[in-house]
Amino acid sequence: MRSVVVSVMGSLLVWAVVPAAAETIEKNLFGDGYIVRDDAGRKVQTIEKNTFGNGYTVRDDAGRKVQTIEKNTFGNGYTVRDDAGRKVQTIEKDTFGDGFTVRDDAGRKVQTIEKKTFGEGYTVRDNRNR
Image (cartoon, rainbow, N blue to C red; front, side, top):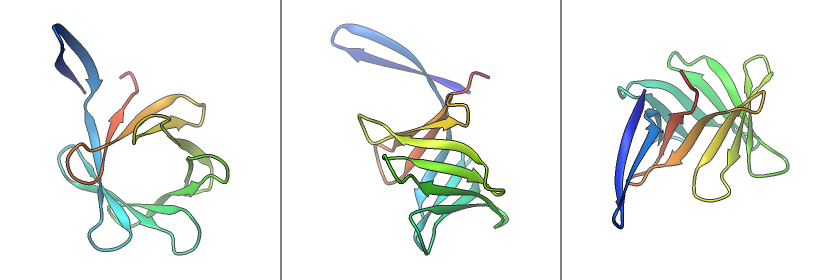
């Protein structure tokens, strides 16, 4: 789903079609991690900081481990692996701004992660053409 944003820059009216918010990532109040909520506000995943190492474990709403997120040795990004250890995505820090770009295993941009303007957390936007 996409949303339309209208803004006025000087006397120029700007229309932009941007992806609608798909999910939000909020800091977990209890513990060292994050909670992922869908656009209806339902908790769909938790992201837990690993006890050892620089990574995270992603669990579904039933508590099953579905992915791991590892900090890259070189660069400002992360590698996402499925529960079998296969590389499925990379998360790259944007050069400008506080956001991230998510790419699939073929290098295609599939999502953007933007820091929220108000409050703590992030908004995940889908970049796939559906």
